[in-house]
Image (cartoon, rainbow, N blue to C red; front, top):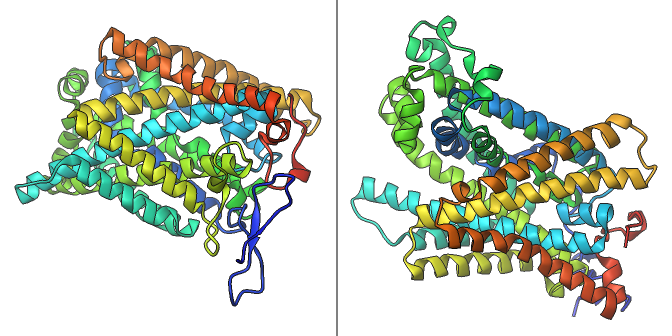
Amino acid sequence: MWLREKSSSGAAGASVTPPGDSVAVDRGKLRGNTIGAGHIVFFVVSAAAPLSGIVLGVPVIVGQGNGTGAAGTFVLVTAVLLLFAVGYSAMSRHIVNAGAFYTYVAHGLGRIPGLGAATLALFAYTAIQAGMFGALGAYVDRFVQRYLGAGLPWWLYSLAGTALCLALGVRKVEVGARALGVMLLLESALIIVLDVAIFATGGASEGGPAGLSWEPFSPAAVFSGALGIALVFAYTSFIGFEATVIYGEEARDPRRTVPKATYIALIGMGVFYSISAWLLTNSFRADSVVAEAGDDPESFAAKALRSQLGAISNDIMSVLIITSIFAAVLAFHNTLARYLFALGRQGLVWGRLGRTHRTRQSPHVACLVQAATATVVIGVFAVSGADPYGGLYVWATGLGAIGVIILQSIASVAVFVFFRRRSADKRVWHTVLAPALSMLGLLGLAAVSLSNFGLLIGDPGAVATVGMAATLPCAALVGMGRAAWLRRRDPVKYARIGDLPDDTTSPARPG
């Protein structure tokens, strides 16, 4: 056999020398020095599915949130997340690991909360991905029936998407990045063309750019109506940007590339969402825009497209919404696979999850397990007869979104504590002020999201709402319980929680 395991001290790494190769490949490490900031941006922005954010998210903010204040709401959320990104990026210069939130929380708050964050992250991202698979099946089914006159069960399309995710996930990381880049550019191009058309005509005013209203950015518009609902739905459009750090091990010069990618992705999404929401609301009359979005949210963006670009634009959107959803599914597949890989490498779960492909150095075992998990979830909903959109998509993505909001809140606390306990970085803005402000903002957002939990998951009823809400702390308790057990029964594995690939660079963690 080519495999040479490390010593029994426990690192879950191994090296392999395939025939004809003279250089040993570490089977416990991802393929390093491979991707740049642009690749990472494609991964994380694709997870946010910007076309879906505009087509599905903006109508809810306008119709059920704060009305014309949608654009200003995106500006407000972007500002809070930029504060988070300051400390988050500063910490990425000291912590380079595929475990992202898990590793940050372990180094900031301790090993037990860290492993709790890991299981909560796995649960939340799995829920979001499962929901997106439901949306993928529903939209492909709708497309096939509309243009071909017949269709197959929705879950077959979802399973086909799972297989394609697996095929791309096990390949070299840059292959998936290129695929995501193409899909992201296409979906963004459609909205940008719509934005330009509305700007040129002046939207509903038909008075050119001078006829556009700036009211959507005014404090009076932003802080009106149901601001809590607007904030939560605006925030969900950004979910995925925080995953920049999971690609640190595979990035070129990660201590520079990861922060750069984080800021590019976040600022790019903030500008895109804010301008698009502003122009989209301007495409309707001020006295009817809220009713248009509230009465028929699914057709809100389609009406603007039809009026500005003609009927063919709706046909194009029918295709691009599918590629947008698939891009998000693939991005979450990569995120989940790297979480599993990080945990497997440290021996905290099945050890083979921490092994990479012998030539591609992709986390292929973790990809297989992730695809199998998605298949099981899709199968359960298929057998139950649940609606793939109103059931699987709404419930699962709403639940997962709240989980990520809570995770980000915990991570903001971990970043603040990490720099308070160490003298690694003396910059006050980066290590004190920005993390503290983001901590307050994100904790407030978490409180708002929990108060609107029923709405986020489609209001399935009191019992179902309580039951689904309970899954989030339960997911965290699984990891915390596992860590507590390891502390008593296996101190060596317990000490590995949050380890970095090169453990000589791993800062000391609180117990």
